[in-house]
Length: 248
Image 1 (cartoon, rainbow, N blue to C red):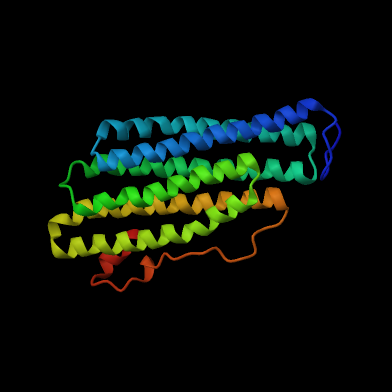
Image 2: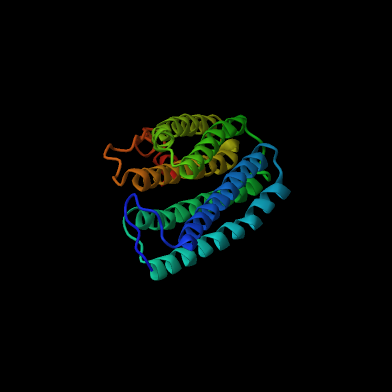
């Protein structure tokens, strides 16, 4: 088969079809992960264990799509022997698929915590979870749009917004610790919320990984700036070492 280089058209039209199919698979997988996050957040705020279980059960679909993407990319690498931008596209697709799969796993973890949280009394900070969840959900949507439209500016914007996710996580972390210190009866609920918030924050990290890979696909270079990170919970000087290490 003909190798494809930078800026050249593919001689074999079926190769174009293969690349379009790969893109479609990734976008379908990403859309499912985005929906999983939205449903998991609803399960938390509505105390809906049935919805949470549905999120847990649906995660298998994301795993299956991840396997399909890996198999498809392996076949393309073997049969097409891609070069330049095509090679970047396929290698990046493998990485994007892995990040989306992890987002799905974290959504499943949030759902599992939601079920456990429903067995404990509700605490006020639960109402702040949708804020950080909505921010990450918008990041996932925008990074998928950036991939579909090959929009490097949108990918960079998503990459920069991870700092806001960290700041919201820091704020929620401190609020939850305050509730735990004020009343030990809040510890169980707040501990579950801590892990829920951390799972959402990690989804943001994987979304910025996706933005970096999209930049690489489009520009052929890596983002050279250090990723904006504002998560300082590991160094938070709280009243209890045991509490401070809940997230480590």
